[in-house]
Image (tube, rainbow, N blue to C red; front, side, top):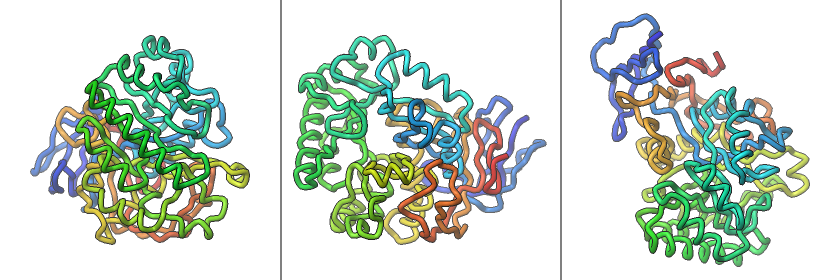
Amino acid sequence: MALIIKGGLVFLGEKFEKKEILINDRGIIEKIESGTIRGEEIIDVGGRLVVPGLIDPHVHLREPGQEYKEDFESGSKAAISGGFTAVMDMPNNKPPTTTKERFLEKIKRAESARCDIFFHFGGTDDNFSEVKKTNPESMKLYLGHTTGELMLKNPSSMERHFREFDRKKPIVLHACDDTGDQTRDLDQTHHNIEDAIKLAKQINRRVHIAHVSAREEVTIAKRFEGCTSEVTPHHLFLSKKDEKKLGYFAKVNPPLRAESDRLLLWSKMDVINCIATDHAPHTVEDKEEGAAGFPGLETSLGLMLEGANRGLIDKISIFQKMSRNVASAFNLENRGSIKKGFIGDITIIDPKKEWTVDRTDMYSKCRWTPFDGWKLHGKAETIVRKGELVYHDYEFC
């Protein structure tokens, strides 16, 4: 049955307008009009914000291999409740997604997920033939130490992947180097990005810098127009001054930076392309043993709207960086915008909704967050996925 969304302020890429949307029975946006669209199934959203389904380009859903931390069911429910209709899963599973067989297994496992899940393929020092056989839409290269065993050790491997992988498809770069010394690590991160951008520019291939955490990284990335970048809400809202309060929960990669770096990062938001959660769920026991990473799918939207409330970013930029820009950076066709002919993925937000982040009331299996107890304004109230109402009044349908 066709679905009509009326009564809302619809985000059309550059501004909000009072429009009605008709999504046909094939899940495609058919009409966007100012007048009254007639039909049977109507949602009157009463002045709420109607935006394209949010897309997260950087999550770790842990399946297969570590389902006790997260799986496609729990992770996709966390995504939907956070306003996301699609996410992109990273390859550093145990075992890592570095072969065609493992890549296809993940796709099969994710068929019953609540949101759409796309997968980055992991590049290694010796899996060039697997990359060619699989022909994924994106690839991830680890240039520094991180969770898992995917760091490139051969200096020539990055160049070979850069040259052999379809240059119109993005290669995501994990440039940070978690070896313990933050000053040395940050210098190495900048060196890794410098080398990658220089090579990408030389051979004219697309790259994407994951989780930038300092202003200098953004500055380097913008030297090449074929490079896009992302930032996490936790690097925008937390810094080293929060480490004492968070204790062992504070460990994340890249690490929390100085408060001055956090503030300077906000000053570069005009040239950062995407907002990504780097949703990396670990159990409390994992964190006690030194695991690095934060969950983020259920708090990202609320935090960014909090940024808007504080005058640090405007709502137009938020939804561009959480939908349209992600779709553009990763070649996700007919997604990321509310346009005729696009997939009917819609997130409906109550910008005045007051809520308190509660670690005990989360869909993610990890059941903790560094933002526990934070009071936020603005939350996803209703989610339409491919024209189907899947989440309404803060509950799954």
